[in-house]
Image (cartoon, rainbow, N blue to C red; front, top):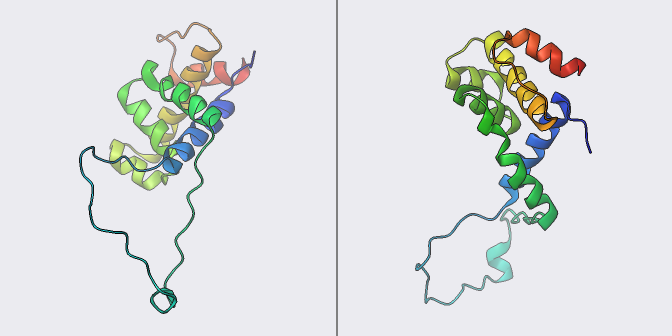
Length: 142
């Protein structure tokens, strides 16, 4: 059994965001083309950028990602939004603009969200009466 810390939670959320980006794009059902696929000659391909190969994630990685997607259910909506934006690699400037918060407040909401997730995964009670700073210290020290 793993003892969850906010740093481990952050790594797992970043991994889930990476796996979400690597999944194939969803397609609408019922739409298809009867035209034959275009075969490009060598002269057509000269000077073009090569297509990047998309490596699909393993089934175990997808299972971990699906488990991780449920973790933000115990958070307030603003905390969950900040946690996921940071996991997707967004800059603090965009996060602050989207959340309508200053940088220090957004960082505190992010650390609080990671701490609540870590405490929940460790099956420790989350006392909502504590201040955010005390709960963050409790999760880091626990």
